[in-house]
Every structure is written in C-alpha cells, then in structure tokens.
Length: 132
Figure (tube, rainbow, N blue to C red):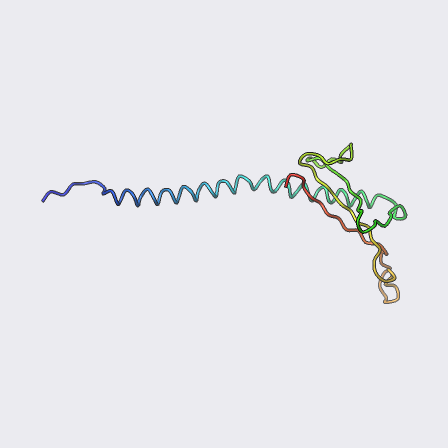
C-alpha cells in the first residue's frame, strides 16, 4: 500500500477555519483599539469644557448669579476644540453645556450646627458632545 504525503481535505478545512477565527478576532481588536484615542479625546475635551464652564460661572460675582427656572438652564455651546461658540449656536461636533443654579433646601446655613456657613445656592452642570 502506498501512502501519499500531504494534507487531507479535512485537515485543510480545519486549518482554514482556525485561521479565519484568529483573523476575525485580530481585526475586531484592531478596530476597537483604533477608536480608543478618538473616544479619549472626546472625553478629555468634555471634561475641559465642563471645567471651563464652571470657571466661567465662578468668575461672575456671586450676586450676579441668578437662579435658573427648572426648565430653562443656562446653555452655552462650544466648538470641537473647546472654544465658546461666537454665534451662540450649536457647532458641528461641538459641545453643549447646560448649567443649573438652584436654591438649596433649608436655610443654607450650617452655623447653628457648629459648621461653616453653606452657600445657599447650588450649581449643576451637564455636558454633551453633539457628535455622539
């Protein structure tokens, strides 16, 4: 009986299947890792824009801050690089920041409990990227 050297059809099929699974896994990982820097930039820019908005509100005199009604926050638009929108309108791939300034519940003063006086108002901010 003569035995031929080489691979059988079944062995080639299994090898191709293993190679295909490995290739799909590698491509999926590469696709995910290539998006990571862009997602990081969006997140970091969002933090930068939020801090910029907080600093803008802090720069205003305390008495100049007005309480915002529940349904109408202070809205500021930023471009994709974190600069305030000159036109005051949404920018492509820009950021929208909503700031709420609301009165705190209670008297706003903890002096009767031996603590420092609390600020009678509270600021809350929301930031969203228009590209997402």
